[in-house]
Amino acid sequence: MVAREVYPWAGHQCGELGQKVQRLEHDVRGAVVVASDIKTTNASVRAGRRLFFKSGTLLSPFFGINYLDIDTRVQGITSLADAFPDGDSINVRYDIQLENDDKYAGAIGLTAGFTNGTSIVFEWNKSANSERYLFSGTVRY
Image (cartoon, rainbow, N blue to C red; front, side):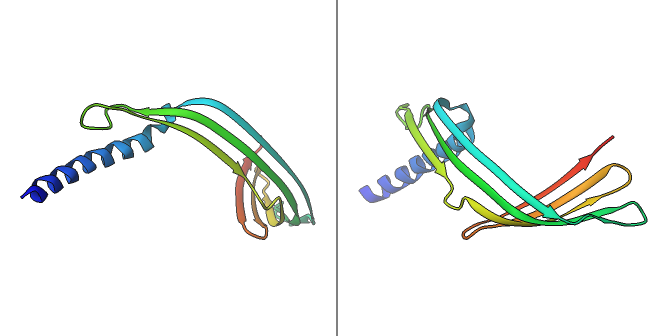
């Protein structure tokens, strides 16, 4: 008899807490950042040919190397009011450290330039443990 009474109550309470935790995930932007230290260094070298076409289009395939060093730390506090049935809150102190192991990556890509002043670039970076893709567009007037 006790089990029938306890489990529905626990399920109901856990369901409410789960909804509040999901809401916390969406409300993290309101957290108070106590300290942050963000250091990023990015350097790259590219080389390639410029191929001109009669239509005025320019294609430029290239290759190169990219150095990316990320060292980031963010600390802060966030609170979830009324997290429990009795109205108690949860205060969460967080400390996030992010850095990359693979500093160097090879790069290959293609730039296409058009007579109307637009251009697009596609680039693929590959290191031992990661891949990065870059796609960008430019309009010059």
